[in-house]
Length: 258
View 1: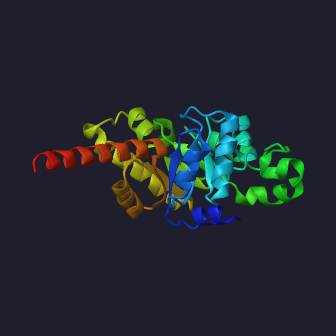
View 2: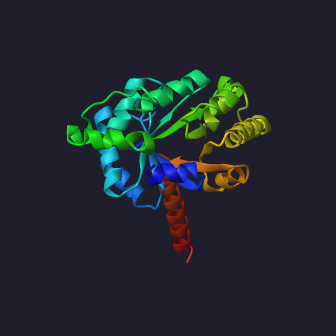
View 3: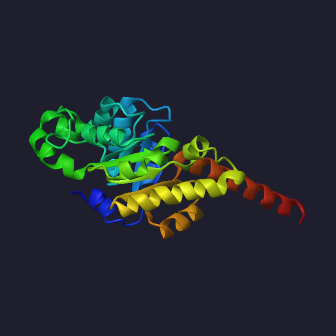
């Protein structure tokens, strides 16, 4: 088991971020920030398969583990992400035990899975296939994202699936799916998230959640979450620019009043 998967399994607090800017420079900037991992958002960002590999390569330069949130459940996308050298995948909208099993099988080589063998970057373009095959099943983090009403209803069965390392809550989609949008739905959403995290931990899995703001991490950690994706590179860029503009405007107003 490699260091990243070991830390996930031990429920050590890990703080990462989504990487949505499709360029190696953005990955390198984020990697040097001290984050524990990066999750390349192939699901929602405008990123192509070849760019995913370049982004993973950039993270590797700085020894920061890179995961990929794949665009759906397709085994081909999971394999492509792992062949690029990613240390794990985040599979979105997993709503049943069978979907969780499919994610595990696509991520593991036989006899525990059905991942195909190929000469991709992870295997040294064919030069290190035996070495990679020997270690890949132990090093790969399989995270499934529970973010639907169906997933909430099936959380016990999902959490019982062997091979799932992390069950990750997507609060945004979950709030829409269970009709808990906005302040009026806050209590309903909180209760749903508590249920997912509680069941996950009870089954010995690692619980994760997306947090838009740093102070969101504490309350979820208090009930068992330990794997946090904090905002994204685009959110940090926007927030930083907004704060800097506001500070500069305030400074200019003070200067004008002197």
